[in-house]
Length: 144
Image (cartoon, rainbow, N blue to C red; front, top):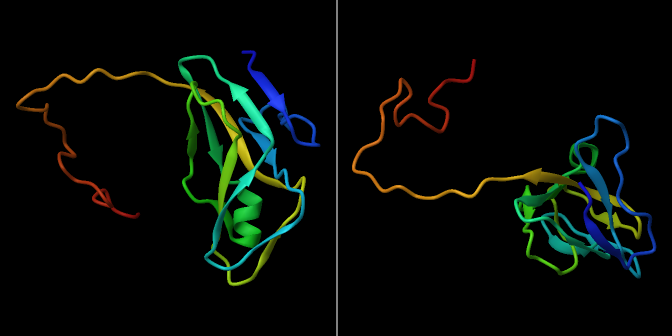
């Protein structure tokens, strides 16, 4: 699938790091470093603008290493970029650690996954089919 992209950052385009990678790393496009204090959130620009085909979305997801090692994650994970959005891709980062985190220009801050999706059409009804699970949710199937 080909996707039109405008790159206003000073960085290379996102790419797949391995043949089996699902996501491409997004880099911060900053004029100066930014400090993210504990429990603080911010939107970090990437300098990237895309035109997705209808029927696809781009999902902005956390980088596992950044989350595990530094406590930095994407607040609305996954963030959805719709096919009709033409603005800059921004990443909502949050610092869930107890230490300040410095975001530097060019730092890999999130990953982008391109995915196809369906559009639903509602069919109102008075009754749903029954299942073994029924209305059980929020841990109803146990932890072990």
